[in-house]
Length: 329
Image (cartoon, rainbow, N blue to C red):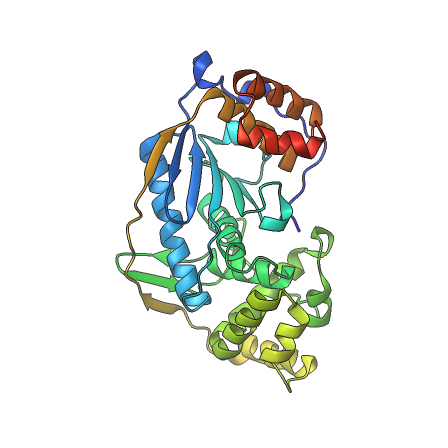
């Protein structure tokens, strides 16, 4: 399952700066306990991003997964601005995420703008980061759960020793109007982007928020079974045994109309990450561009061009070899 697949879009060469060896900005790799970040945005911004991701991960793990851990690192490519990002991820998106079973690396991947001018981009990035973080723990997720969690957590506010969750969601910076909800049976069957429309997002936000507020223990049980089995139907049956789907839907709608919508406040002890830094070479940069084009653009001519450049510099570059193997070369 890929969060978004973009085909037939040609990368805009003018938006992509030269590699470092040809006068372009330096690329570096930052590695922390749960993140590997490649960027040309500068070390200061890169360290801030790694810290933000690690802190967000601590909040998500501590509040949604009750201390569960995952061994996978999230691979983040942070392009320095919207112009460069748009060569691989077009507007209006400032970030895209791919789960482990949706990309060549078999680990959570996110591509984003290190500095974006898109309205409410911090919320978009939080949404995609939650996808990547949660998929590192629960590798196989149904779309309703993945999108409901991401929509819920995109409004997180992390302060000095506190994290607030559960504010009303927005859509492109505007309040989300709950004028139409999909039947839960339809939502649970949705597995592709074609059915993930406005009503779908409104419904999965409402369901995840309702369960968080009213049935947190059952939601935690569902997450535990899903993490173990990857089976959504089994996890729902075990967590909500004896509760017919129609009853769950009626109770959710009644809560939306008459219940108490809480903003949850948590005290958190955020740990500052230990970060290692290394310089990336031109071969790494070409390979990263080939990887992004392969995953999110789909133009194999551009992939081959950047692969050839990477392998001419370093025939043994690991990322380039992974992409080349996928192309059958």
